[in-house]
Amino acid sequence: MGGNSTDTMSLNLKVWRQKNAKDKGQMVDYKLDGVSPDMSFLEMMDTLNTKLVKEKGDTIAFDHDCREGICGMCSMMINGQAHGPEAETTTCQLHMRKFKSGDTIVVEPWRAKAFPVIKDLMVDRTALDDIMVAGGYVNVNTGNPQDANSILIGQENAELAMDAAACIGCGACVASCKNASAMLFVSAKISQLALLPQGEIESAARAQAMVAKMDELGFGNCTNEAECEAQCPKGIKIENIARMNREWFKGVIGNR
Amino acid sequence: MSSSSCKKCATSTSIGKKQIMGVTGLLLCGFLISHLLGNLTLLVGPDAFNKYSHTLTSNPLIYGAEFILAAIFLSHIVMAIRLIIENRAARPVKYHMYKKSGRGGTLASSTMPFTGLIALVFLVFHICGLKFGTVYSTNVGGVEMRDLYRTTIEYFQDPLHVLGYIVAMVALGFHTSHGFWSAFQSLGLNHPKYMPKIQCLSKLFGLVVAIGFSGLAIFCFIKGGH
Image (cartoon, rainbow over the protein chains, first blue to last red):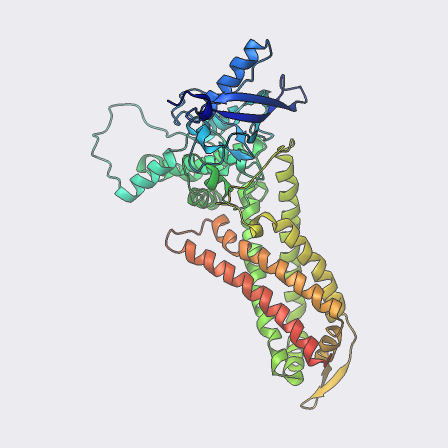
């Protein structure tokens, strides 16, 4: 694992520091030496925090959990891109070997009206949960469960539903969208359920309810740029947004 | 999962607004094509163009058609302004650094408000300069009619007008190259097999608009013996 000094990198970091939601916040410069190319981006941030602790400074707050690229907790806008420059990669799975020694790296929190900053790089993503509460579920009657094979699902729909279900709800779509729109997230959740028989029945009403909540929370409108798809760590496709638009329209017609 | 509260205001939801943009945009694309095809009579000659414009303007239905067209334009513009304001409000604190991945947004998609604004400013000049331009009269086959051909040729003798048209039509070409396929996406009319074809058609549409209309302006410039 490397180890000798010639393998390590020196970085200039510009990190957003904000004490709390009310603080105005600012970009602060840090210099960090001894970064191994094998470190993940979060491990590099840990190293910076260790340095800050030694210097009796305030550590940088950032979200993280599994560090395996599946939990959706890590965020960070790295050099102007959600989860950094690498396609289909979360911040925790982004490695420092993707950068060069001497690079200046800009690190910012997700920015959206619906994602208020809690502290430094941490933002409150409760808005995504609120949208789920509005309709991201399937109503089932209580009683004995059905036989596992009684509901047949075509392979194609099963795969598409699984692709949509890969969404980890990290909010990179909102962060990367120039309009701070949450449509990729919402459409992934709507698609995942609409494609399966269990969720299909309520799909139009679900789309109506979830979209209404999304609008209420102050997310922007989609302009079909597909930047969300490009920066999504799970490669969720904008085809899902078209499906959501369709389901939503069915709801408009159906309610008349 | 109650949707009864939102069915009344479908047009004020994010998707409703996008779908209105899509429908009006597609209708405007249809107008552009018919306008371009009609303008091709310029290539045939003065009589053909004047007869074409006379047939259009002498039909009493033209007022109804113009009203509907103006309504479509207006809804497209008003909706666009609303969307732009809302989208700006959705990110009150801007990024210190924001970079496109290169795998998503294009020049056309990220400049929609600007190219749209250029088209709008152009539209005002276009109507003032030609429709409400100098009125000459001519006689084609015994029928007295407006010599719009002469007005058009004279208008394009000013190189600034030609340049203005080229800039505006290139902007409109970019605008429609994103807008055309985008409308299908907003309306949920997508299919894994046909979407790439629609996207390709969209680029072609933009190219036809930009080259077609600019070409006609250049044609008029040359035709006038400048």
